[in-house]
Image 1 (tube, rainbow, N blue to C red):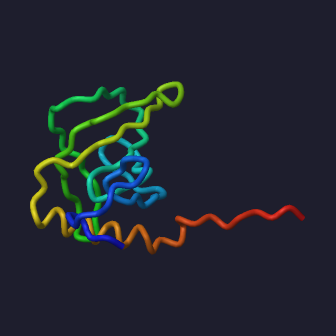
Image 2: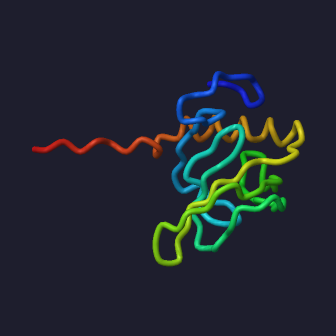
Image 3: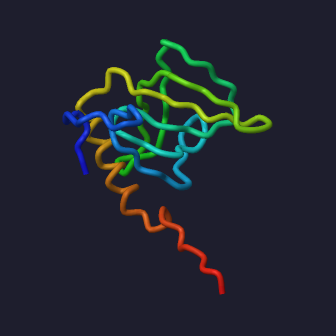
Length: 121
């Protein structure tokens, strides 16, 4: 797994970093769908618009609750009172980056992440 802040070739889909899918990982605005070194995709009931304004995204980590400075870079309505938003981290401290690395490691080892495939019987 690549550590946050290390250079990487840009993939064809223009993502800067690989994504780790999460399950039941909650934050202050909803549920984190996936996480990377540069941002998160969050499912939320809050209508949010892209903005350069920094928001505080609060989440539980292995070391307790923390707030990450983020900004909404895209938003897409997915249903009645349901949106997906992309947030990008802004001005994170070294401690916050280390915490994010630890969280990503914990998420990647979460056995609930991989649902068993159903086979036709």
